Image (cartoon, rainbow, N blue to C red; front, side, top):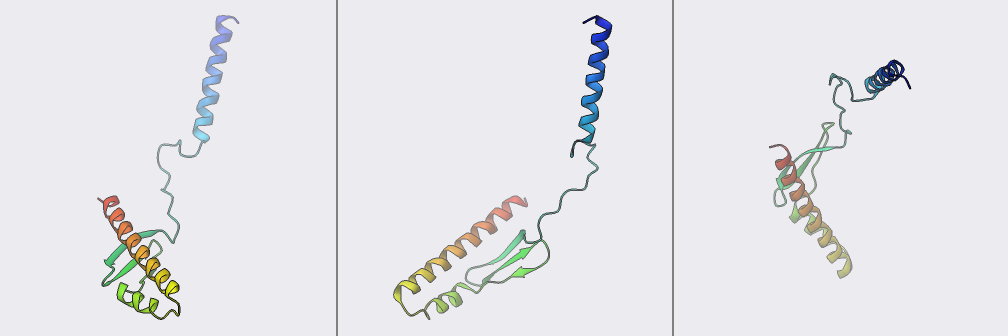
Length: 110
């Protein structure tokens, strides 16, 4: 290829790549609004197991699971020992995970 033709080809290729770069999402100068999280995204966890947790979502809704003593009392109403143990284990795991989530959100918001 001759030098002028090669230069023209390179300029054309560079122009095409620049044009494609402008069309790609997120490749602009940063004027796009940030994407919003799904409405059910947990944004805050308040409280503790003894006094009750509050789970707050991005859309403004909140969930207030029972305290650990209320949950334990409900577990005691199951007929079989296996069902009671299963229920108590689920409650312990649920509150452990809520405390871990609360700690993770605290770290993320620093």
